[in-house]
Amino acid sequence: MYRTLCLLWVLLAISPVHALSNAMQLPTGLWEGIKQDDSSYQLLEINTQPPHRFISVRIADGFRHASSYAFIDIHVTCSATECAINLTDPRRPDAQQRLIIAKNLQDSLNVTQMYVNASGQSQMATSYSMDRQGAQSTVKRFVQQQQTRLKALKPADSDDLSGFWLGIVTFNHKPELLQLEFSTTGQSRLTYYPNGMQITNQTQFMPGQIEAKNGSLFIKTANPTFASELILHSSNNNLLHGYLYSVHKNQVLQPGSFVLYRIGQ
Image (cartoon, rainbow, N blue to C red; front, side, top):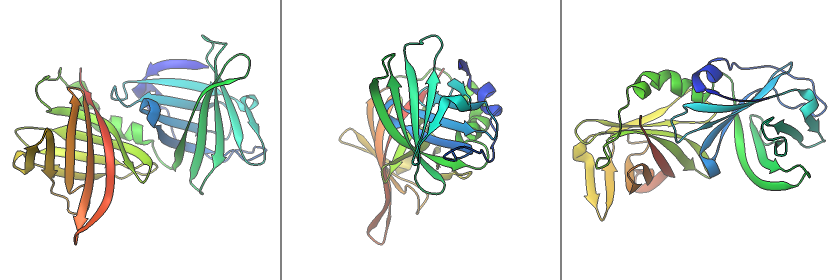
Protein backbone atom coordinates (compact mmCIF):
# COMPACT_ATOMS: atom_id res chain seq x y z
CA MET A 1 0.00 0.00 0.00
CA TYR A 2 1.37 3.36 -1.03
CA ARG A 3 0.64 6.70 0.54
CA THR A 4 2.04 10.16 0.16
CA LEU A 5 1.64 11.73 3.55
CA CYS A 6 2.52 14.72 5.63
CA LEU A 7 5.86 13.81 7.18
CA LEU A 8 4.92 14.66 10.74
CA TRP A 9 1.95 12.27 10.66
CA VAL A 10 4.12 9.43 9.35
CA LEU A 11 7.13 9.86 11.57
CA LEU A 12 5.35 10.49 14.84
CA ALA A 13 3.76 7.08 14.45
CA ILE A 14 7.10 5.28 14.11
CA SER A 15 8.50 3.57 17.17
CA PRO A 16 11.18 0.89 17.59
CA VAL A 17 10.08 -2.72 17.12
CA HIS A 18 11.26 -6.09 18.32
CA ALA A 19 11.95 -9.62 17.16
CA LEU A 20 10.36 -11.21 14.07
CA SER A 21 10.41 -14.95 13.42
CA ASN A 22 11.27 -15.44 9.76
CA ALA A 23 13.00 -18.08 7.66
CA MET A 24 16.15 -16.02 7.40
CA GLN A 25 15.38 -13.92 10.46
CA LEU A 26 14.80 -10.65 8.68
CA PRO A 27 16.06 -8.32 11.42
CA THR A 28 13.35 -6.58 13.34
CA GLY A 29 13.61 -2.97 14.39
CA LEU A 30 13.79 0.47 12.93
CA TRP A 31 16.54 0.95 10.33
CA GLU A 32 17.66 4.18 8.70
CA GLY A 33 20.03 5.31 5.97
CA ILE A 34 20.54 7.76 3.12
CA LYS A 35 20.17 7.03 -0.60
CA GLN A 36 22.45 9.52 -2.30
CA ASP A 37 21.27 9.31 -5.89
CA ASP A 38 18.03 11.14 -5.04
CA SER A 39 19.09 12.64 -1.67
CA SER A 40 16.45 10.79 0.31
CA TYR A 41 16.36 9.43 3.86
CA GLN A 42 15.14 5.82 3.96
CA LEU A 43 13.38 4.23 6.94
CA LEU A 44 12.60 0.53 7.21
CA GLU A 45 10.36 -0.66 10.04
CA ILE A 46 10.20 -4.43 10.56
CA ASN A 47 7.66 -5.35 13.23
CA THR A 48 7.13 -8.52 15.22
CA GLN A 49 3.78 -8.78 13.43
CA PRO A 50 2.81 -7.25 10.08
CA PRO A 51 2.23 -4.78 8.63
CA HIS A 52 5.76 -3.48 8.15
CA ARG A 53 6.72 -0.19 6.51
CA PHE A 54 9.24 1.34 4.16
CA ILE A 55 9.33 5.15 4.14
CA SER A 56 11.30 7.50 1.92
CA VAL A 57 11.60 11.23 2.68
CA ARG A 58 13.31 13.86 0.54
CA ILE A 59 16.10 15.79 2.21
CA ALA A 60 16.04 18.62 -0.35
CA ASP A 61 12.55 19.78 0.64
CA GLY A 62 13.23 19.71 4.37
CA PHE A 63 11.44 16.39 5.07
CA ARG A 64 8.07 17.98 4.35
CA HIS A 65 6.57 14.91 2.70
CA ALA A 66 7.05 11.16 2.77
CA SER A 67 6.27 8.20 0.54
CA SER A 68 5.16 5.23 2.61
CA TYR A 69 4.80 1.61 1.55
CA ALA A 70 3.15 -0.93 3.86
CA PHE A 71 3.84 -4.63 3.30
CA ILE A 72 3.16 -7.96 4.96
CA ASP A 73 5.07 -11.22 5.25
CA ILE A 74 3.87 -12.65 1.92
CA HIS A 75 5.74 -9.77 0.21
CA VAL A 76 9.02 -11.01 1.73
CA THR A 77 11.08 -13.94 0.46
CA CYS A 78 14.36 -15.00 2.04
CA SER A 79 17.32 -17.15 1.08
CA ALA A 80 20.18 -18.20 3.29
CA THR A 81 21.97 -14.88 2.81
CA GLU A 82 19.39 -12.22 1.96
CA CYS A 83 15.75 -11.22 1.98
CA ALA A 84 13.81 -9.60 -0.86
CA ILE A 85 10.91 -7.24 -0.11
CA ASN A 86 8.51 -6.51 -2.98
CA LEU A 87 6.75 -3.15 -2.80
CA THR A 88 3.91 -2.23 -5.16
CA ASP A 89 2.36 1.13 -5.94
CA PRO A 90 -1.30 0.40 -6.79
CA ARG A 91 -1.33 3.47 -9.04
CA ARG A 92 1.41 1.85 -11.15
CA PRO A 93 0.89 -1.92 -11.04
CA ASP A 94 3.38 -2.29 -13.91
CA ALA A 95 6.21 -0.97 -11.72
CA GLN A 96 7.48 -2.60 -8.54
CA GLN A 97 10.19 -1.66 -6.10
CA ARG A 98 12.29 -4.45 -4.68
CA LEU A 99 14.59 -4.19 -1.67
CA ILE A 100 17.32 -6.80 -1.32
CA ILE A 101 18.39 -6.87 2.34
CA ALA A 102 21.65 -8.46 3.48
CA LYS A 103 23.20 -8.28 6.92
CA ASN A 104 26.44 -6.35 7.14
CA LEU A 105 27.62 -5.82 10.70
CA GLN A 106 25.56 -6.53 13.82
CA ASP A 107 23.67 -3.24 13.60
CA SER A 108 24.00 -2.54 9.88
CA LEU A 109 22.29 -3.71 6.70
CA ASN A 110 23.29 -3.53 3.05
CA VAL A 111 20.33 -2.62 0.85
CA THR A 112 20.00 -2.85 -2.92
CA GLN A 113 16.90 -1.01 -4.11
CA MET A 114 15.67 -1.62 -7.63
CA TYR A 115 12.70 -0.88 -9.85
CA VAL A 116 11.23 -3.89 -11.63
CA ASN A 117 8.88 -3.79 -14.62
CA ALA A 118 5.91 -6.08 -15.26
CA SER A 119 8.21 -8.62 -16.94
CA GLY A 120 10.34 -8.88 -13.81
CA GLN A 121 13.29 -7.05 -15.35
CA SER A 122 15.32 -4.65 -13.24
CA GLN A 123 15.30 -1.15 -14.76
CA MET A 124 17.37 0.75 -12.23
CA ALA A 125 19.23 -0.23 -9.07
CA THR A 126 21.10 1.57 -6.32
CA SER A 127 22.76 0.43 -3.09
CA TYR A 128 23.12 1.99 0.34
CA SER A 129 23.52 0.98 3.96
CA MET A 130 21.11 1.21 6.88
CA ASP A 131 21.88 1.42 10.59
CA ARG A 132 19.73 0.15 13.43
CA GLN A 133 17.99 2.94 15.31
CA GLY A 134 17.09 1.92 18.84
CA ALA A 135 15.02 5.01 19.60
CA GLN A 136 13.18 7.54 17.43
CA SER A 137 14.45 7.99 13.90
CA THR A 138 16.94 10.71 13.08
CA VAL A 139 14.35 12.26 10.75
CA LYS A 140 11.70 12.38 13.47
CA ARG A 141 14.17 13.85 15.95
CA PHE A 142 15.24 16.50 13.44
CA VAL A 143 11.64 17.44 12.64
CA GLN A 144 10.69 17.67 16.31
CA GLN A 145 13.69 19.89 17.03
CA GLN A 146 13.32 22.10 13.97
CA GLN A 147 9.59 22.21 13.16
CA THR A 148 9.09 25.69 14.65
CA ARG A 149 12.10 26.98 12.73
CA LEU A 150 10.97 25.31 9.50
CA LYS A 151 7.46 26.74 9.74
CA ALA A 152 8.88 30.24 10.25
CA LEU A 153 11.14 30.16 7.17
CA LYS A 154 10.66 32.94 4.67
CA PRO A 155 11.48 33.03 0.95
CA ALA A 156 15.24 33.13 0.49
CA ASP A 157 17.14 36.19 -0.70
CA SER A 158 18.68 35.09 -3.99
CA ASP A 159 21.73 37.30 -3.42
CA ASP A 160 22.51 36.06 0.08
CA LEU A 161 23.59 32.68 1.48
CA SER A 162 21.87 33.42 4.78
CA GLY A 163 19.26 30.86 5.68
CA PHE A 164 18.57 27.24 6.51
CA TRP A 165 20.41 24.55 4.57
CA LEU A 166 20.01 20.78 4.80
CA GLY A 167 21.89 18.03 3.04
CA ILE A 168 24.33 15.15 3.10
CA VAL A 169 27.87 14.88 4.43
CA THR A 170 29.98 11.88 3.45
CA PHE A 171 32.58 10.47 5.83
CA ASN A 172 34.53 7.40 4.66
CA HIS A 173 31.99 6.74 1.89
CA LYS A 174 29.07 6.85 4.35
CA PRO A 175 26.39 9.54 3.78
CA GLU A 176 24.80 11.17 6.82
CA LEU A 177 22.64 14.20 7.61
CA LEU A 178 24.11 17.71 7.85
CA GLN A 179 22.38 21.01 8.63
CA LEU A 180 23.71 24.56 8.27
CA GLU A 181 22.13 27.76 9.56
CA PHE A 182 24.13 30.47 7.83
CA SER A 183 24.17 34.13 8.85
CA THR A 184 26.16 37.01 7.35
CA THR A 185 25.52 39.18 10.41
CA GLY A 186 25.49 36.85 13.43
CA GLN A 187 26.42 33.36 14.54
CA SER A 188 26.18 30.49 12.06
CA ARG A 189 25.74 26.89 13.19
CA LEU A 190 26.67 23.57 11.55
CA THR A 191 25.04 20.40 12.95
CA TYR A 192 25.85 16.78 12.09
CA TYR A 193 23.34 13.96 12.75
CA PRO A 194 25.03 10.50 12.70
CA ASN A 195 22.86 7.65 11.42
CA GLY A 196 21.57 5.21 14.00
CA MET A 197 22.40 7.43 16.97
CA GLN A 198 20.65 9.92 19.24
CA ILE A 199 23.46 12.46 19.34
CA THR A 200 24.56 15.44 17.27
CA ASN A 201 27.90 17.12 16.75
CA GLN A 202 27.93 20.86 16.29
CA THR A 203 30.16 23.84 15.65
CA GLN A 204 29.63 27.58 15.27
CA PHE A 205 31.32 30.50 13.53
CA MET A 206 30.94 34.26 13.22
CA PRO A 207 31.25 36.52 10.14
CA GLY A 208 34.78 37.48 11.18
CA GLN A 209 35.86 33.84 10.78
CA ILE A 210 34.84 33.77 7.11
CA GLU A 211 37.30 34.61 4.33
CA ALA A 212 36.18 34.87 0.70
CA LYS A 213 38.80 33.77 -1.81
CA ASN A 214 38.57 32.77 -5.48
CA GLY A 215 34.81 32.33 -5.37
CA SER A 216 34.83 30.14 -2.24
CA LEU A 217 34.37 30.76 1.46
CA PHE A 218 37.06 29.54 3.85
CA ILE A 219 35.79 29.28 7.42
CA LYS A 220 37.46 28.56 10.76
CA THR A 221 34.96 27.37 13.37
CA ALA A 222 34.82 27.20 17.17
CA ASN A 223 35.04 23.39 17.55
CA PRO A 224 38.65 22.10 17.55
CA THR A 225 37.67 18.44 17.07
CA PHE A 226 34.74 18.58 14.61
CA ALA A 227 34.75 20.59 11.38
CA SER A 228 37.22 23.17 12.63
CA GLU A 229 37.63 24.26 9.02
CA LEU A 230 35.05 24.52 6.23
CA ILE A 231 35.25 25.33 2.54
CA LEU A 232 31.99 26.38 0.85
CA HIS A 233 31.27 26.68 -2.87
CA SER A 234 27.96 28.12 -4.03
CA SER A 235 26.85 26.18 -7.12
CA ASN A 236 23.71 28.31 -7.43
CA ASN A 237 21.37 30.20 -5.11
CA ASN A 238 19.88 26.99 -3.73
CA LEU A 239 22.82 24.57 -3.68
CA LEU A 240 26.09 24.51 -1.75
CA HIS A 241 29.01 22.10 -2.06
CA GLY A 242 31.88 21.96 0.34
CA TYR A 243 34.41 20.20 2.52
CA LEU A 244 34.97 20.00 6.24
CA TYR A 245 37.83 18.73 8.34
CA SER A 246 39.75 19.31 11.55
CA VAL A 247 43.49 19.80 12.01
CA HIS A 248 45.35 18.50 15.07
CA LYS A 249 49.15 18.63 15.32
CA ASN A 250 49.33 19.26 11.58
CA GLN A 251 47.24 16.14 10.91
CA VAL A 252 43.94 16.34 8.99
CA LEU A 253 41.17 14.56 10.93
CA GLN A 254 37.66 13.43 9.93
CA PRO A 255 37.61 14.91 6.41
CA GLY A 256 34.26 14.92 4.66
CA SER A 257 32.53 16.37 1.62
CA PHE A 258 28.98 17.64 1.60
CA VAL A 259 26.13 19.00 -0.48
CA LEU A 260 23.48 21.27 1.03
CA TYR A 261 20.07 22.38 -0.26
CA ARG A 262 18.45 25.66 0.70
CA ILE A 263 15.25 25.05 2.63
CA GLY A 264 12.66 27.83 2.31
CA GLN A 265 8.98 28.55 1.99
